[in-house]
Length: 618
Image 1: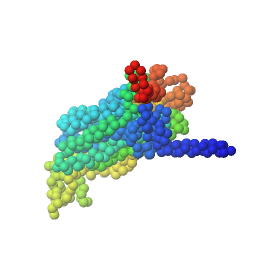
Image 2: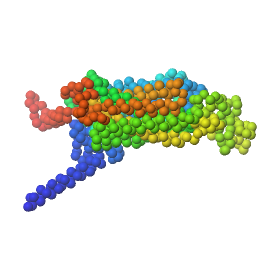
Image 3: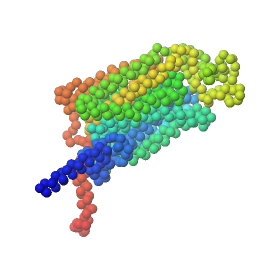
Image 4: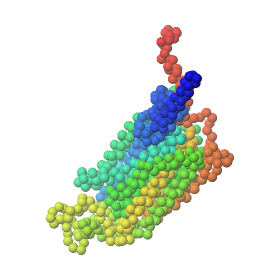
């Protein structure tokens, strides 16, 4: 009887210990003492492949190697490249002026295209680099690649040089591929959607932060340079330069895979050396990958487009100051704080309940809603007059203390285009309308006290968008639009890791390049197209394209998991046209038994030493 009682107590104790392990594991604590193939402990719970199985608020507070260090390094590295690529957008109101760089509307369009065009090829290349050298080194290299462009843009004097520098800086956006590959190699497939989406979303946040911060950095430099606009916008690039250097150092502190870096793992025999020909053939021959290339172009590509055009849109069409225009434009990118993660979480939740078919349906529904919001945003202002309607020049006004003022007729911006707005340095004298009196600007008793900078505009035409009072509604709809854009991005990369695991880097590079291709196509055919004169018309066209291209998602099919319309195994069709060679493993698939055997040999070697022609045990 006593023996039975002891056994019951032991069983009960084992059950309690197992429950304690389970509770702590959910909190992100590795209580089983699991180590990598070289005996280094993990700080989070892992699966048999040593990929993290938990991703929550508890783990986000951690930065230990390899899992959470890789997450934070990939996130910050991508954030840095996004910040620098779009740093010019919120400063364009200053840069474009004739007294500064003097950019035309066409040259601004070319610079926007250049900032995202080079990354198309670079993202595909980065996919290969991730397979060959690891995502860590690939990301660090990309951050350093952009540095010459950041330095060069601060010294450029011609429009063509400005465009070339934006092209070079934009190459760093390929760090997105390294970010997603790295996270996919560190986190279990059950949570990879949330991990990828959060890293990508918080990296994309750089676009919102740069729109928010750079106009105020510009104000700081204007105050320090006595309102020298041309010098001030150039000095602003000190900020992205510092971020790139810090980002590169942080990335190098990470680890390629959960068990170690590529070199040490290949030396131990745990990792196969990458066969370039095989991974490229596998990636480009997968039809699911090509569909995702197109559809991702109209979620991430839309984000890149909006990050380029939104600040200038709010300044030009709605008459916001460059600082407020930056804040409104930043709202689009700031939705990345949560929205892309929502997409990843929804993808994982749909997968848990409905499998891959759930992931696909969720992705399609969100992308259709995204396109609808884009159309609505354009329609809101379509019936009002814009600065691009060719209304002719009018006398510019500004308001102060309940009165309207104009500049003196000899001032450069005495007149502006109809419905237009101009940010200027405050002149020495202004004219109050209705009094026909010139006022000195200053703090004397008979002077008018004005800020150092003014917004002068067409205030008389009530049909102008800037005078319609629609700004708040447009920003609200844009926030809804942005939320669905980011969610769609997260939903896409909840599917990418399943497409072709042995060629994960190539597929990630292809899909990521699709995002940039979509941005180039959108900027070129809509927002730079002279036949689409108005930006709000461009939003309507873009929304229609988003909805139309989303129908391609119905063609995605996985033989073992199904598609949107067909269950697993119901079709003989296989989207993987080139088959995976027998015995070939992906870059993140390790043979732990080989590594374990190598470790045992090393232990034996440590315990023995050669004596003459014999071996003596120590």
